[in-house]
Image (cartoon, rainbow, N blue to C red; front, side):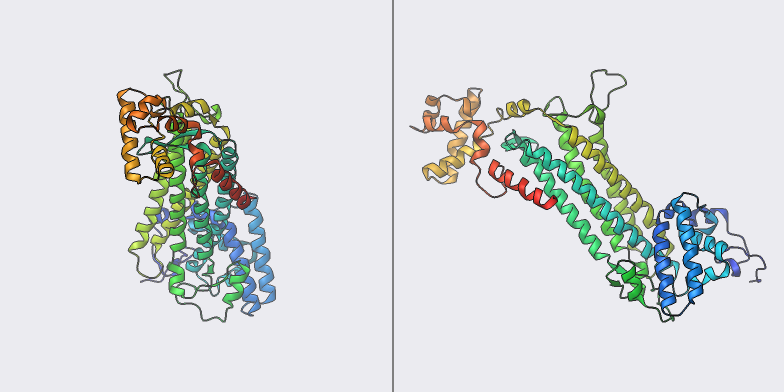
Length: 465
């Protein structure tokens, strides 16, 4: 190849004879999205610079010049005065080229003993670590709002569903606290993710490590990591932490989607258990009577993005040989998109929960349909008459059958009707079959009894405050 006299590309073009094709420049450049890593890149560069000085790889004067230059660039970024240039491909080279403008050739010494491969892995880990903390704070806010709402409705009863069919009577607070438990597991998964990415890739260089006598433990500790990564080839190609982050967002999103689905159902005219506040509802352009739960529907709809982003990166990574390949540039957009949308939907769900009006009477009246005390009745027969559950089940089924024939509920049957099924039990059965007492009969840990629900709320308060 004829030696190129022009500087074809300011980063890597000294051995190339043609200018970069505009199409390649467009697909190759990541600055439009990875500029979000700017402050993390500067932080990593400042620590790397301090390590180079400590190990006498650069002089004290060089360290001061580089550090001051990076600080100026950081201030420009914070003031939104930094000009990102697609010509320099990514955030790393944008900062390095700006540093060169500020301090001259000394800027080139910053890249000693590192590569963009270990830089980007380090920056991304730092960004995800910070983002996990933001997510956990938002999750806690939602948990607090759920607990606050649940505390007001321990004795508010509603039908609990299986197969979307009315099954047994439960406390509305108990239903809400189920979502508290889901969010608690979500938070735990994110914190496990945070612990799992606590190893620093910087110093792995391109893939094989470096010949310079660097101090990777110094770099790791000063960037807030527990220790350096153990294998340089794995360090630059690993995106497990990113996949775990996207997976955790998708799982959390599925919980928010389920909560949204409940809210959509409850707000429908057919249920009318809840009403959304006007500021989280929309109307119709043609039907003036409509009040739509679009906020909850949109949260539910985001689940498709969360799942898609996770699967997108998983597909990208599954066929990559070691070590770094440019395919890995595809990691950032799904990560940023999922993070942004998760924070958004958490804020929306918080707004929905805060403004949610509970229609207690509708919930109570719904408990009068579907013979929801049938299981309670069977249990009561076992407990009080020492009969096998299967026998109690058959007796209860007969009582339900009789109620169906009379087109009424089992608690509406007369004492003489109940005596026809089981002689001399009619009066006791009638006293038992009061729907408002149903939740009080539960005894097991984690059940819907007011005692257990109050206990779960108290535990939650201790966990949150």
